Image 1: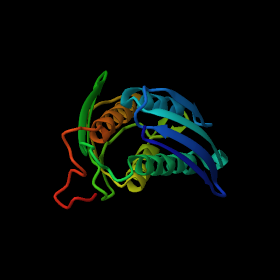
Image 2: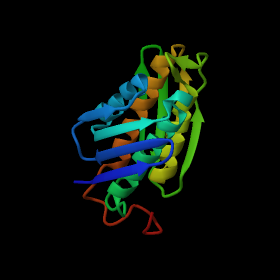
Image 3: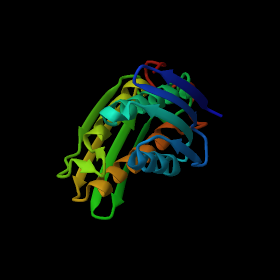
Image 4: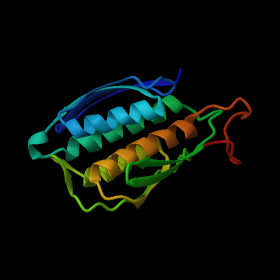
Length: 194
């Protein structure tokens, strides 16, 4: 089992996160950001990752620190759990519809952190949640997991649907990219290292 536990405490946030890449979609998330909890639950369920998150932070100034730091911790957990990246298929992609919204994500577990985020939304808020934080979360995730991640919205109007399609698509892409193939000997790279 590829598992990791990350604990991170700063002056702004306190986070404890457990990840099992080879899970069944069990999710236990406790943060003060209700909509974000819902997105993390979708991420677990559709990627079939088991994730537990206990997080608190300085939400009186907004959700930015909390969302970004959870992205950092989740990225660190994937990096730690994937170890030397042996036998993983490395690449993954997924196209996910959510009602009128359609999102494509593509991942390379490359060791080269990069986020390309092409998602425009008319609405800047979903309840109290700032939609710009979605990009901040995935930037923190990609940087700390050391992955190349592309996220593209083809079309969509409803911000909730768009964001949910993003989380579902990325989780499915990451599940595919981190899956193991017995046909792969060592690391899937001409360099023999990722």
